[in-house]
Length: 196
View 1 (cartoon, one colour):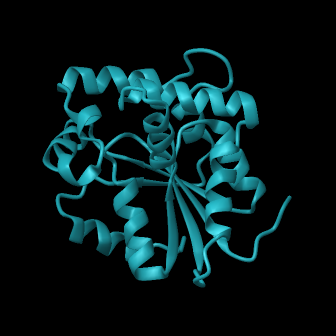
View 2 (cartoon, rainbow, N blue to C red):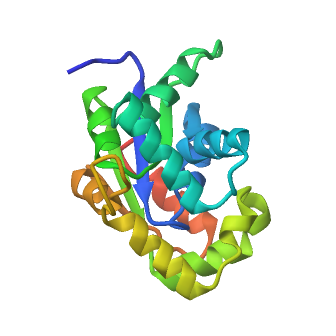
View 3 (cartoon, rainbow, N blue to C red):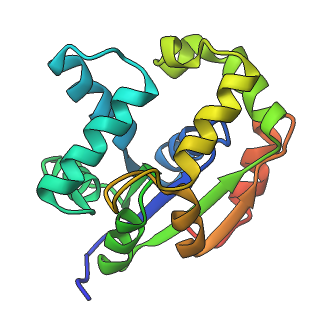
């Protein structure tokens, strides 16, 4: 097992469950550095001129995993972190969607946290925060489409390089039910947890 001199936390969970909110809280309160693998993929999708939707993100992520290994997105996040000159207490990486990513976090002596909440609550959050989420086009969908996309990402639709969020869930070390009505309630809960 590889050891690191800093703490690594991998965040996974359903869409709209609060992964970025948790990551940003760790940045502001615990001096973590935050890398969103979704943002890394969005940049690559944009560079290739592909449609900025979840299907393109799934396509590029599977391609990268086949070419560079199942933990490639974790390795890219760690590489990004190591290029920083500021001193951080740790690295938080969201959004793990393949079990190989959870394995890679564990190989680096990190922990994986799974977040979830009621699907309608998560959908409503996404619709209320579309502008801030930076992926408005892929969020501009009906509740039925939201459920279909989640189903497509929850279980593998092909080889081991495709998304299988349920398999990531099975490898999680801790679980958070983010059914809180406000961010303050969520932050109060987070502040009392021993993970950080």
